Image (cartoon, rainbow, N blue to C red; front, side, top):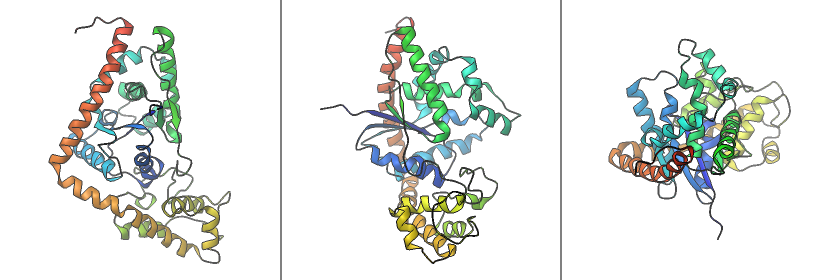
Length: 332
């Protein structure tokens, strides 16, 4: 029987996930568990490339872990852990940084973006964190990495690093490929539908958080920016409606043609209300399960402790082989 391929993905502990995080990534992670050996991670090491309040980071990390479980990650089927609990990641990152060119890192668009947003703290970690991201992936010899469009550049760097290591030291690393969901890979802002939905948006109505209550979700969708045509259909120039149709399609399973037919002759008000209700009802099980999990701190600790043990077992074996290949003396 063919062995299952390995999927790795991580998410930053920035508090509650947005609808964009959920539809573009996390919602798809649960079903992947049936097809692949899945390794999922809350990447708290990456989070400190920008200044964090320690208590808030700790709480956000635990909330993110619980949210992943609430969104369908089964700790019996997948390896789910907290990045800082696996010291193999930074251990491997140093070796990989010596296989990475300065020019490659200087071309990373996210470094440029974050440097502009945080000009008072352009630290070395911000510059080198794509190498740690490569280590996250290569520590498990992952075959596939679910990535959004904005992360493709980092995955390409991970591929380059793996290929360069293999050329220098002999084939060892699997060169990972992107796994990009066909639908909902990029959910846009409800207020500026040409921009990606982001929790950092100054307009609170631009972003849906998956733990928002039903009334809040419906209110935000009612205020979503559309256009003056009053026709529910997918067409170039109708960014707001196209975005709402994408969201509604994912939650209801209705095709774009069916949605157009369903709302023929109806106004945008009816459509926005329908989208809001579909999203709120679809997220209700996530909100309920999250509320249950965060109350059971002992169970959460058991899960992330066991997850770290599983992650370390795999990544230690791979990292040890890498250390041997580059010529480090074995201390065992």
